[in-house]
Amino acid sequence: MGRHGMLSQKAQVLVDDAALTDARSTFLLGEFEMLNLRVKEIDDGGIVGHIKSKSSSQSREVQQIIEDPTGVRAKGCGKRLKSSKEKAMSRGIRQCSVCGENGHDKRTCPRLNDRCNVGNFSETQYDYDDPQQDGRDDATFTSIASSNFQFGL
Image (cartoon, rainbow, N blue to C red; front, side, top):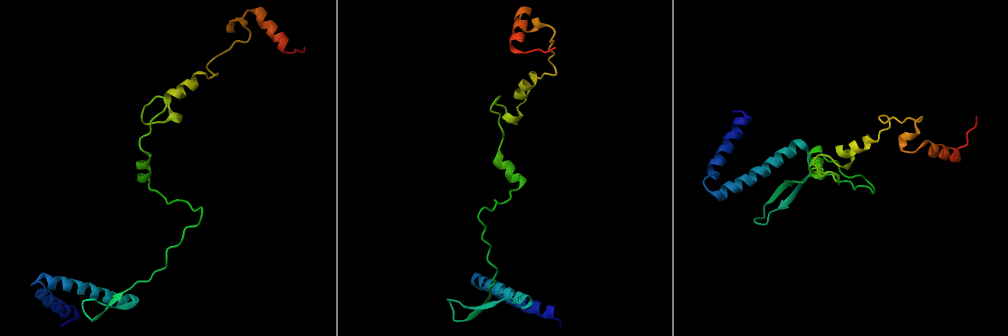
């Protein structure tokens, strides 16, 4: 009989006996966990400590894993990184303060951007030869020009 067959047969007998009552089954589950830790300790070479249980004077071996402590974050260290889903949930729905619509804010408001584009000088042509275009007559235009500017010919 091989190792696996022999171990399976012994475990089956224990399981059949422990399944009769709740107390036996909980006891056997605890022992299986302890045995599982001890078997893993053989392969891992971990540190094993002895702990005495309060209910009995028997000593049990429990695997205690000793790890390096977590590092302390330095002063001025940045915050943790957030996933894109977490960022989207914290941001919420943007609402414009100019027009009150959802989906954009003041910087990207189409109504505000349209107002800015109305005064675009490439669309508006100004004829400098016609002084009547701005509503002033020729005499006013020439008097303003002569008083403010020096022309050298």
